Length: 234
Image (cartoon, rainbow, N blue to C red; front, side, top):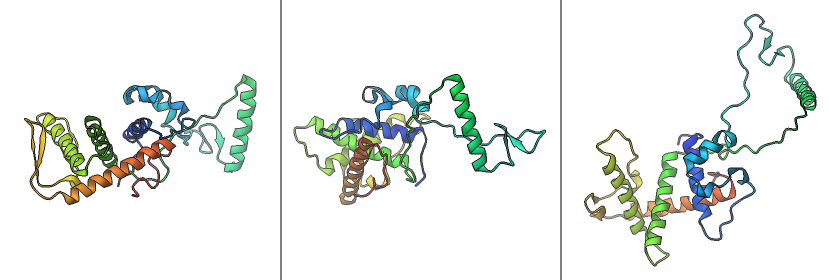
């Protein structure tokens, strides 16, 4: 799976954290997320516009172009004759003196990042999120707290097929139903319903797996370690 570290991966983190905030008795690591502000009552795009660059800085310290007139120095005027240790010590001393001169007292800020070393496919995480949301919609519309995999599968299929039908005559590209959830069924756009024609054992098993992984991701988000190194372990 391709590793994702961009805005869409952060959006999924944000969305799973919002789902976690709605789970009864699930403790959110509020100290860790203090800098995120009121994320539960804000749409992602508005939240990202205010917090994106601050919490997830896109720039790192790098060497820049050398002076054309002098091949022995680089920008920041660090002589290449210095060892990394010597250069670091001199830079540190220079900054300490400068900060004292201007009265600046830097305060370390937490830099947020996805779990280091974990590869994730955002399309897969979107599918887990859609599956979790489908289960929540069904739970909210019925008196029962237990919704069968069969019902969740039908709702997830309806969601994907309805969306594809809505945008099929436009240039907008939308993700299709995950192959693991395919099967012998039909979607009726008039009634917005799904009818099953064949055996759905494999797809129902996949739905249970999706729900289990979604639950792992929600708990990982609550903890402050997203997506975590074991989110796919059932």
